[in-house]
Image (cartoon, rainbow, N blue to C red; front, side, top):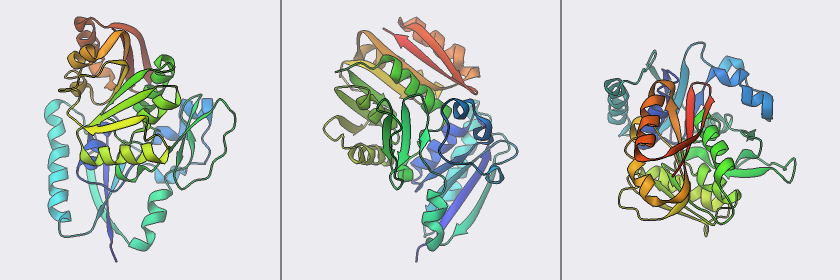
Amino acid sequence: MVNWNELSILTSNEAVEAVANILNESGANGVVIEDPTDLAKETRENYGELYELDPNKYPKNGIRIKAYFADNETWKDKRIKIEQEINKLENIGVDLGLNEITVHIIQEADWENEWKQYFKPIKVTSRFTIVPLWEKYVKESSHELVITIDPGMAFGTGKHPTTILSLQGLEKTVRTDDIVLDVGAGSGILSVASVLLGAKHVYGYDLDEVAVQSSSLNRDINQLTDKITVSQNNLLKGINQKANVIVSNILADILLNLVDDAWENLVDGGYFITSGIIKTKQKMVKEKLEKKGFQILATNQLENWLSFIAQK
């Protein structure tokens, strides 16, 4: 019988994306985000979630991230490395908040329920509903677009503000027969969404092998194998694929390294959607985009996160 280590990290809103990425790259078999703002989020008032949240499961201060790792001979070294990588984030100016890390063991018999209880169908925008693979769901209208995912191997269940902002950006820019590049594809939600909006083909890239596997899995679950190509790559380095839309939901500091290659891979008039930007990084990213020649068409905000829609 295999037991599981539930690694729990109490951190800040600013650090969520970076910490979750570290956990994902460390081979977590699932990453859960317990954000108390979910209990009274505006998007719920607008769209409505399809299940009731339990306030007792959420922290009073900060945001709790839980990740699950098999309890084997590699776990002790893996935990040390994870803590070291998280602490390094302070060196690049990321506020870690309380940064309290705890671990407890989950028996294999409890694993499935412990993991799946966090994921129910959720309507994240006016058009998109994200449904876990194990849930049955019936569309409420023909206008609704359903993305089915198995989030067990990579960060990205669709409910984080940066993902919602990215989806909203895609809704405004993707047209029939477009070519879309999804940079930092993660669980593949944005790739699937692009095809559902009419894209002819999507090329998804991620540096992390686990994310590539997860994105490929969710592509196949949605029966879009012929519409989405997933590859392991460092941003757009070495890529020469003209696109109508490029979307990237990654940390602001990493986005800066993507701007030049995004410009080269976009057709004239193409759109560049950037998300994962905290308020304190807004000016830095905006200046980089404008210096390259991009025109900022829209700046959108959800909670403390921002997204730009820029045009070449």
